[in-house]
Image (cartoon, rainbow, N blue to C red; front, side, top):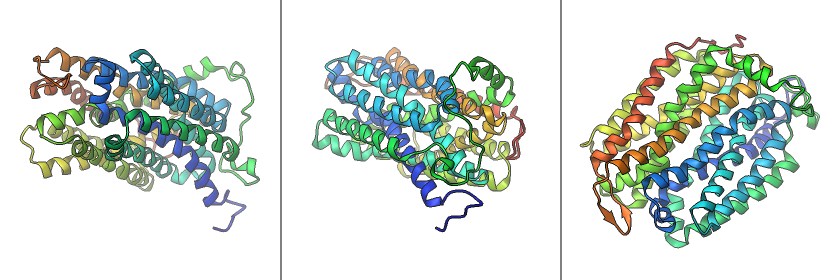
Length: 431
């Protein structure tokens, strides 16, 4: 594509820079969902119950959520290149620690390192998106970011299960750790924070990234962000969407489908991947449609209502035929792509100087969903366990799963209700 000096960098270069950051986001999503297809192996190796597995998986989210406020502030001060490089290096080391751990403590510490480090991926990617692409396609670009991440989630389904049928899970996860370390080196040498650093005009004014955090008055910026109503509401709303998807496809969906739909582990993983494929397809489409319509709230609200209906069928319709279950999973995943509207929504609701902090808070809200729901579902399953065991692993009844899934349904309904109180931005900077 011919370079247009008046409108920004070549799109091929912009997509390449952006793509390297997206690969790190893909790796983070892979690690997020991977425990779903190795539940039996993890429970056997580390001698844990559903509660223990929920906490092991949840450690990723505890660290991820804790890092979101500092990540947003660092993205506004240090820039995405340094964040993404450091994130890759720590994530690679954490992955190797998890894969080689002799017991639960070190495995949990590895998951904690992974979650805390990949927490920088999405916010860093949002900053690259705003710097390297025009504002009119921002929601479309961020929608593609989610799609790339979800490719990682799908890879952690049937492909990972296939590899685990040939190699030990520790070997497979170790390889992904080495690949993440290599990616960190590539990002450092190739990625730049803005087109101006490579000699091209940019779409936003460059801001100095070498100032200290104290000079940026962290706490004052954070207080300013909290004054905007949309920030509070969009902190809670996307957590219901991500919480349902990542609790089901990321941990409890596979054992649920194995137990109550008589599926093999590989087929159950493939079925949960249908949900993720729909999510990956829906995010860029709904992001583009929101940009095209010039509206955030109305489209978001319509989509999330479909999501709530879909989950009510998936979780509580016991006699849903197999083909219908596939269709409902896909449709629910597709309309869950509306979560991507949250980021454009919040960044239009605050001044540009606070956009990274706002994005970090929103991403924190997104991850609050699975962070709270994954261990909560595990605890409810253990409470309703009837004593059944198979190969040293607990087996849970259909009633236990239905009780466990109630908090998921409650949160998505709350998300629908709260969305009514948001203020429409009409795809314009209103602050």
